[in-house]
Image (cartoon, rainbow, N blue to C red; front, side):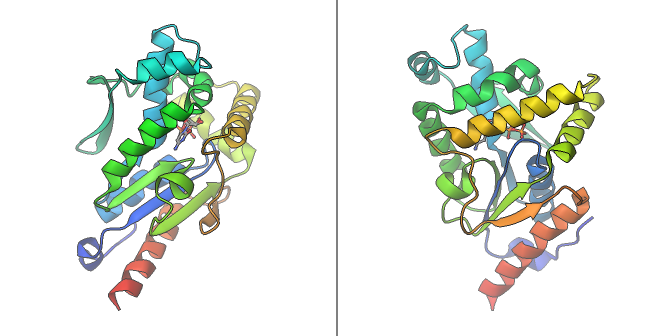
Amino acid sequence: MVHFGERYLSARKLVIAIDGPAASGKSTTARLVAETLGYLHIDTGAMYRALTLKVLRAGIPPADAEGVGRLLATTHVALRREGEVTRVLLDGVDVNAEIRSRVVTRAVSAVSRHSSVREAMVREQRRMGSEGGIVLEGRDIGTVVFPDADLKFFMTAGIEARARRRGEELRAGGIAPDMSGLIEEIQERDSLDSAREVSPLKKAEDAIEVDTSDLTIEEQVRLVVERVRGVVEGTDA
Ligand code: CDP
């Protein structure tokens, strides 16, 4: 595990942004970095997924901006930390498992592109991060949510590595993955997320690009934590 001295934990609380395409290693890295630093971890993708689940359950077509906007007005999405686990609550109910389903994954980009959705989510994410001491991961954290974040990372990985990782996750959940289908789904989601008008997936100019294709999780975490150490030491000096 990465060692990080007490001194750093008590120092200035940073805002750390981790963006990148689907299955690039953001979530695991963000979670472990937050754990190492004693920071809060916000998986913003989980928030978009929770809303998507509600849209699907309500029978609203994901592309229907008005319908989605109306539903949004009566929807409450929250992330609650319980020990090691962060629970995703949709109107007070834990939906952590359901939001990872294939139907939600397939519809989430279409729901996330509406400007009403982005405004509501970004407002909530800024509120959660206002005190610092937070690692946020998503697509637009370094560009839109926290353009002044203390540190920004943009994680990438080759499509094979990303599909392999997503396949392992599915297998761990008892689902046999169809690898060529997975590659197609990941590519399609990336192109929808990158092509949308509002807050597209894009590397912030000042983000540090990390290609995780050949890195272990521990190496990814170490890389981020060492950068944090550099910033904290720099501001302490
Ligand atoms: O599958 P993966 O963990 O890589 O994706 P995710 O982080 O759970 O995000 C799911 C979807 O939510 C993305 O494909 C985007 O459409 C959307 N999203 C977004 O638009 N903005 C964010 N900040 C985070 C996610």
